[in-house]
Length: 183
Ligand code: ATP
Ligand code: MG
Image (cartoon, rainbow, N blue to C red; front, side, top):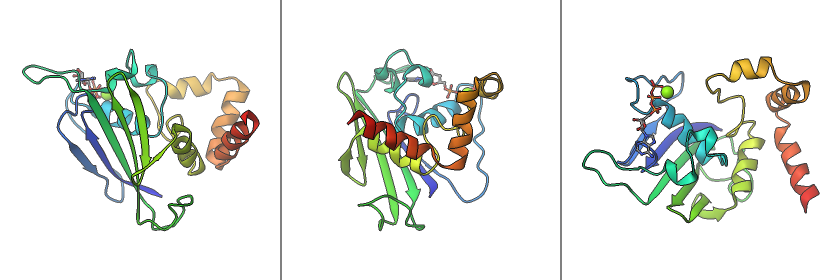
């Protein structure tokens, strides 16, 4: 499944609704310091179910909501929509036959997050598993943070094994086993 669109409304510096269309091939995001390049990648990770506000350079979850600037007042909600092309029909049931898989996360100030897949409300865990099964996700090595290469080199063997398991596409199985053990 390919990432084709990223829509942001009120997420960090993206106060106006913004849509990024990701064409086939290599996409580069360029712009001056502070224009929001890292915020875009954080929006993607947040919509994939990132639960650590520190990993999003925030001091609490409400910090991902546009905080106001100049004469623009702050907002009380933020939403990010990730659109995946499902022509390969790899999406899990009951979404297998949809053309586009639209995963959204919305936060309302002080009320926490709601996740939806094609309009249907789901748990954070469902979104995390969906991406884990597609061998990606908020913590996946497919999204490389600054300083992360060094962390992998210096990691303990178990942590490095998780990187290899992710690459081999079995991370989703581990996540499901963990969930089954908790039940
Ligand atoms: P660099 O080239 O330095 O890495 P960048 O393009 O990656 O810059 P970001 O770090 O994505 O820039 O964006 C930083 C900007 O986002 C700052 O101006 C910061 O004030 C703004 N910002 C972050 N959180 C919020 C928020 N909640 N509300 C409004 N603006 C925010
Ligand atoms: Mg940056």
